[in-house]
Length: 227
Image 1 (spheres, one colour):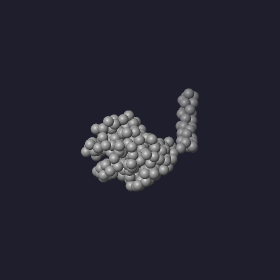
Image 2 (cartoon, one colour):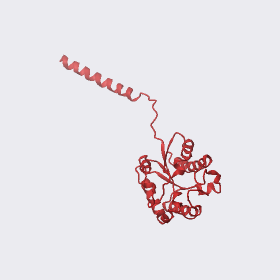
Image 3 (cartoon, helix red, strand yellow):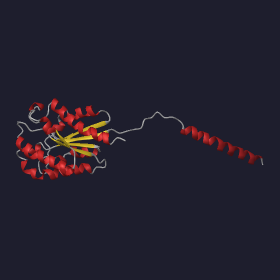
Image 4 (cartoon, helix red, strand yellow):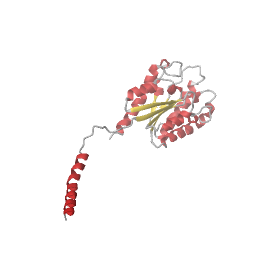
């Protein structure tokens, strides 16, 4: 009988103490902030992306809530029939592995080279393949298409007339067909060859202009996705 009473007392104490312990455990305050990942921006392009300050300027403008990756490849093209298609370069796979939330594509300048103009007939289809590859990523990024800066007088055998009359309209067509935002760096530069160091590659002022145009296109994306 005494053992039964003792066991009953122990059980009663457990039933009384357990809720108190649980209450204290659930009411302990925490100072830990929720972990958030930065918005990842993949900048895809040729040497205008790879070797200019535009991506660094964009990172400064966007701030610490963003992570900007430079995936430019000098000499690369949209066309898959040339000697250096962007989609055949390791940076393309790197950009996909980056799992971007935003992809900024600024390609097409090298497609205006005199030796490569013959491949312009497949430009729009190849550009569409590039865009679709990014859109099919698990991160389902927003894709932004950039109308690249003008081709001015240069020593690289890039044709300004072919670029403005063929490549830029192709880029605009792709953006319209895919219902994507087009960032008009081409008209923003206008006749300012002084924004470049050699008629092609932007100097610091030109890079800042590109970054500003891209920044303005990205900012509304962040605003619209805010809770």
